Length: 526
Image (cartoon, rainbow, N blue to C red; front, side, top):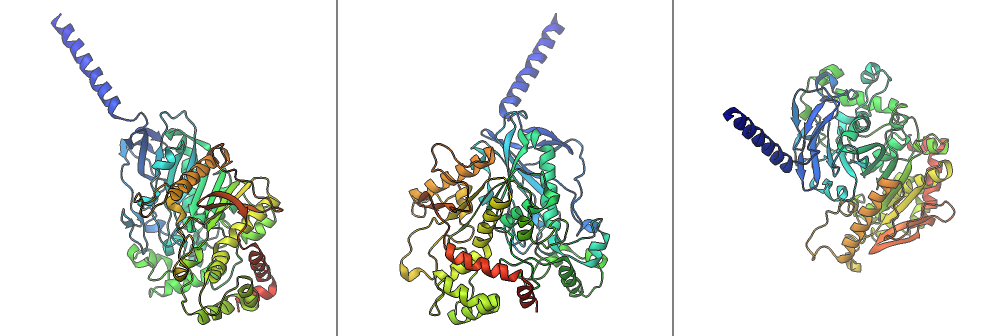
């Protein structure tokens, strides 16, 4: 009898311990993926997994190779801290390392059977900077709206995009240079294979990003290698519809593989060596770019990941026909007009646009007295606006999936005397609104800021759920129509209006058409 009561006591203690453990942990805190068991951390009703490896570390012989599947592990892997960001000139909060191919998951699911929509964030940074550990990219607010949020890392700079004949020769696809994009594709494959364990729907994935992340989204939407890995795409200040050229400019930054390989050979020689094997022995710190414009730090037209000129691919209907939301900010140009001397700036326009410079200067009313709003609008459109507008027109004409175009112009009213410093919404300002990470200080944030932020987060997550951003409580956002060409304007409140500077955009369109002629191509590559 004594042993019986002892056994009962042990059993009750075990049950109590189990109940206490269950009460202190989210039911999704420990899950199984292809590589093994993962343990994250719970925060209210959300479980977060930080630093999940989706590929082998791209180090040693794997430097400048396509990513390889991650190794399996034994036991439970705790994933509660961000992994280091990829090697770069910037300083990510989590540090930086060549071993950087990790992703993070925020899930509100209470079980793996929920099949929630998935949003995959691709950071920007000119393909030279960026990390998932930036505080702005906290997925909690979006997750609270009923989606799973995933942020993925990819190699940047020369470690992510160096092309070289030796690298092309050792590739089974006879290409090199787009390793950062292949990282993104590898992460999407991992997500499609494993997201169900987090309560996600592998057949309802939305990719979204800003700047270089948005350009990546555009490229993935045209890449046959990424076909079927996502169903929807959101591009914030991005798009890659410009023609190729030897000397890169914003909006025209694509190089052909052959030219990129020539630049790669010169890059290798700059280290006093003659082979990739020698370069692979060097410390990764060696390849941190000293300046942003160095060759080998941008995606290229390789004929594989990026098959060709994306504008022409869309004209031919050769793209992943998924639902798209895309747009740009009103004062993108403020970040890219570096020449403060008006006359020198106008001279630079002649160097950049050749015979089309006078037409563009007139179309945008660029003054020779000061670098005005018009000059910045010109730069805004050549780098961002024209690409988003062209993407909308091309997909609407040659695809079957809807396209939603927006224009972000949420900012304080600036007095005229301060217009040279800023009058609209600069590059990247929209991120805080989408992620609902606005400054809580009422001195810096108005009621309309919170209204716009809530609307954008709702539109974004609605789109991820159904492919339609609309809901009863929101201003109706029309599908882009080539005849009507209406956009959603985020300006104090959501409102529908015409495409900004459309007449000037048509002149920009003529410039890009000329650039694709033999005459235009010969002029820029002379």
